[in-house]
Image (cartoon, rainbow, N blue to C red; front, side):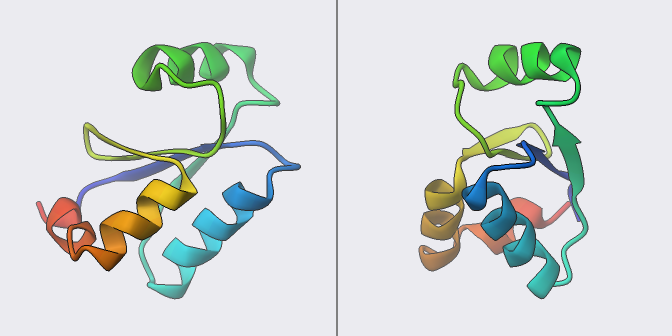
Length: 84
């Protein structure tokens, strides 16, 4: 399974939803809190070209935010993205 990274903050409800989504599916993820690490915020901005959180990556693929994640799941694309 490819590595899942979620760039998030402590106060973001969509970040919580994204983490709960992966947890319920037993998909491990790395949670990077950009409100606690300015360097990681800079990395997130460079990688995603977006300022909002969450920003979700599967491997090198930028999924986007929570709504994008759900759209990928509903379209049946998420399982393919997670495969090595």
